[in-house]
Image 1 (cartoon, helix red, strand yellow):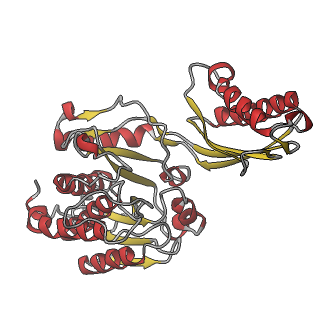
Image 2 (cartoon, one colour):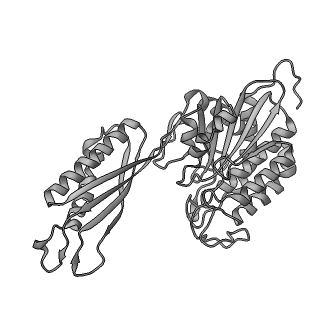
Image 3 (cartoon, helix red, strand yellow):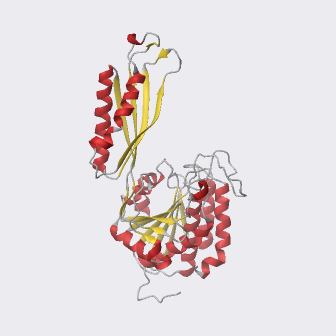
Length: 394
């Protein structure tokens, strides 16, 4: 462990647990943003607030280098009741840091402190604290509000804890890391009738059930089997009475893929299948399809740099470059659509005992704070090396 980190690791741990105890949902991260801004100011980092309502960007410039990079951490919690009983459990009913964003914030703040102390780089690093990752697209909003115009940077980097990877392990892959996340609604309209006289109506429940079944053939029969994709119907709403066949039903669900062409194909297939099945039942089906988070795709060059930095920290046997991508989604993809970058996994431990992401029993592993801090700092030092005109101050 870096000796400087050791001197304030206890403080970082207390900060992480304080954030965990006070979780805030998307675009409501005011207390968290206040804490971040306070700490950055303490470290001598210039602070800008207000992007995407509660976002915080810290700027640290050392030397005369013109190059700049960005490091990003997400801030928001989940609408989930915590099932833990330790001292730093959530103090707010129905809100919980069940994905480790409290730890992500802490590691990036620790890196800001370490870099401000060591000043062992030449250029500018932007510390991006992003709100509303959990389904609300805070990264997209920050980009739309001028993140890369106001804070010009050549590349942007992200890191997420990953239960299942052991402590002191990293996953750094090139290409797809996480999938896109699209949503769809299918509204089925028929003719209501008395449940005892179904021949007088046009049954939307029967049609809806048939559509759900038929949608399962999209991935297996309409998408190239070499490609990865998921179509999941997650909601089916129809009817309110035992003896009434309703005239309207609504299906909702999600689509996951790694390539835009696969998203296009699935959207078209959803329309063909739902409308075709509906016609066979004498009802009408209307599809609404919404593009959500794009796929998270690591740049090969940036991934190699991150892989080398992680290897220098934990050894080649603890850095995995062939991890399969996950069908989950991450709005950091909006940032990497504008700038090259890399999104890495840092091991959070085995995940045994229910301590998995989005579990009510999850908790970020404080053992990895120091490693995350040092990874960020070494990445900056690698990307923005001290020039020959400036002596190395370490």
